[in-house]
Picture 1: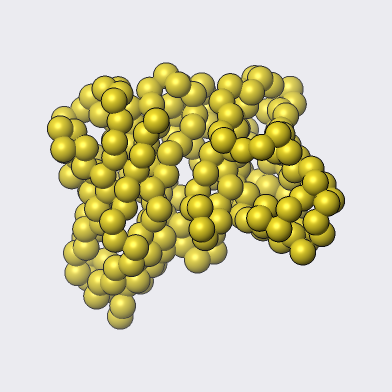
Picture 2: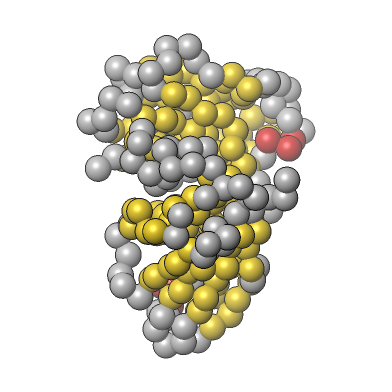
Length: 115
Length: 113
């Protein structure tokens, strides 16, 4: 079974600054995908970024980037130029390759962006 | 394309009753997964349907069941409701069957009194 751990229950950052959210996972699988999802106070879960484990290059999406360390089983999310709209719960998630669509989530990090 | 829709958005039931929640996936998506979100347990996988077949099931009692129709719409049913079933139930759809990116609906907030 896979486990996903987010060690920072809450974080805050000043608007326009950079913040990094941590995620570690445990698996015996070699092929998998990792995701960061964002859940704003309105509750709609939104995909932030996706990383394929077989790719060494870290994924980026505009102000969002990841630091994927496969050997260390670490998958952190960096948010640059933080905006008030980034205030949300952030969930790290894991899915095995070719095993259906069953996500395993971490406990989440509540991020507050302060003006 | 329209996103994932879930109905109803809010529901209040009493212990012992049963409830049915509905999920319409993004057009063309064939996989629907259900998750339960609670403050104590976080996000937990319930089950996944693909082409009307249940492919994966999480560690939930048999009171939780689901089905998928030929148009990919899915329903989940909880029988004999317990207080602990109070949660946000999220539905997610994905295009295919192999570790696809999942797109979530707004959820159904269930309160059991």
